[in-house]
Image (cartoon, rainbow, N blue to C red):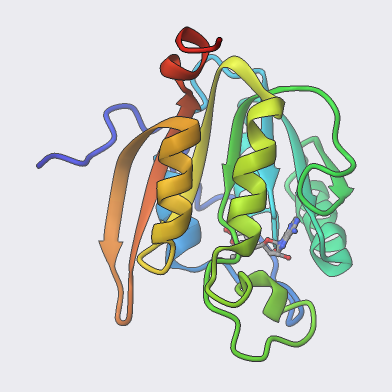
Length: 205
Ligand SMILES: C[S@@+](CC[C@H](N)C(=O)[O-])C[C@H]1O[C@@H](n2cnc3c(N)ncnc32)[C@H](O)[C@@H]1O
């Protein structure tokens, strides 16, 4: 099965300087798998949900108007620093998912906290802790994201093998396609493209 993405538009750019700090999730294999799968073709509005260092937002801002968000004040601060450092315009907002956001986006990217919570504590743990079974934040995201997705918009979402419950819910709410995947030491991670479901509008009573 060919899972390759035909038109990857956002390749890691080694000329960009992305600084890290202890309190913020450092870009990892999941970050780069997501980054490489994102296609910003035709997008004028891009939302990087849970931006962390701002790695994805800074790349997207080279091609599209970009809003970055995070619940962590350290991530918000660091993303602003990295955008300034690289001279790209990124608006950064601190918010719990979509709570402080209005409007719709052509592309939404999210590398969520997806691991089961085993006593998470502090901002850096909230980067990976997705509640008791790893799905709490993703399920909330899936319920809210449709309202903020432009009619022909696309969501690029990273899920791991811990997130079967989230994948099932995504398939109920959206048209879902697996774009890329990778086996890591203790899990498999995949990037999914989600679009508004053709069935949901056709079957509305
Ligand atoms: C796995 S890290 C990904 C960071 C970055 N996007 C990357 O790929 O390297 C998840 C990020 O989501 C943020 N986050 C966790 N819960 C959130 C929420 N409810 N709303 C917004 N951001 C959240 C965390 O603070 C963290 O920065």
